[in-house]
Length: 301
Image 1 (cartoon, rainbow, N blue to C red):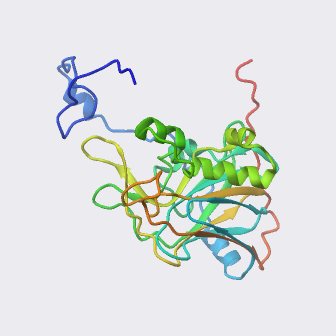
Image 2: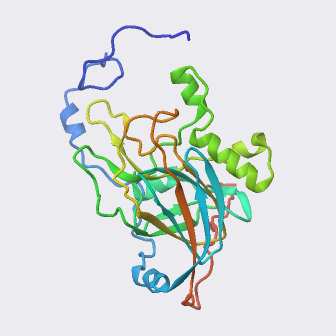
Image 3: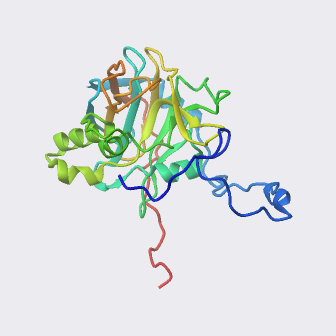
C-alpha cells in the first residue's frame, strides 16, 4: 500500500498522530478548563417506567427460541409489546445485534444517535433509536444481569455502541487476508436467509450494532478503541421490550469473549440464544407502538 506519510509516531503516552506543529496560544489552559455541556440533554424524555415493565415481565410465556451458532448469525422476529432476551447459554460469548422495523427494513437501529443520547454503553432504561427520518425507539432495555459491572479502572464497560462490527473489509485492510465469518458477513447471511435477498441486496441493510456483552472503552494513552475479556457468565442475559414490530439479527462474534482477537478462528467461541416472551398481563389501555418522528421534513423550504 502506498503511504503518504512516514517517520516515527508520537511517544507512548500521547496520541498516535504526529506531535503538534503549532504552538499553543497563551490562553490554552483556560480554554481546556471550560466546563463541558451535554450535547443532547434527555430530561424532556418520558422517564423509564421500571414498575410498568416489571409488572409486564412478572408473568410472561416463552413463545420462541432461536439459537445462534458460534461464528454465525440468525434472524428472529418480535411483535410490538413482546420482550426478548439475548442469553449466554454456555461459555463467555459476545454478540453483534442489528434491529429493523419488521414492516420497513429501511428503518433500522441508529447506534450513533443512541450513543449521542445515552452514552457509549447502553443499559436499563436506554432506548434503541431508529435512523432518520423515523427516529423512534425500536426497543427499550428492561433488564441486564451485567448491570453490576458499571465502568472499570480502564474505562471499560459492557454493551457498547462505539464499535461498528468486525467486518471482512477492515480485516483485509489490516491483516491482508480474507476471513468470511466476521459479524458483518454473518449478519448478511442471516438477513439474506430470512428474507430471500441475495447477499448483494442484503448487505446495505446491515448496520452498526449494539455490541452485546462486549467489554470495551478507549485507552488512556492513545485513545484507541479497546476490548477486554467479557464478564458475561453462563445464564446472563440482556432483555428488551419491543416498542414496534421488529426483525432482528444476532451474530455470535468470532472473537468469542473478545479477550484477545477477532476476525479469525483463534478464539474459543460459544453459541448465543434469543428468547421471545409474551406478557400474560395486559398492556396499559393507552399503550401503542412507538410513533415515528413528527418533524415536518420541510427542511426550511
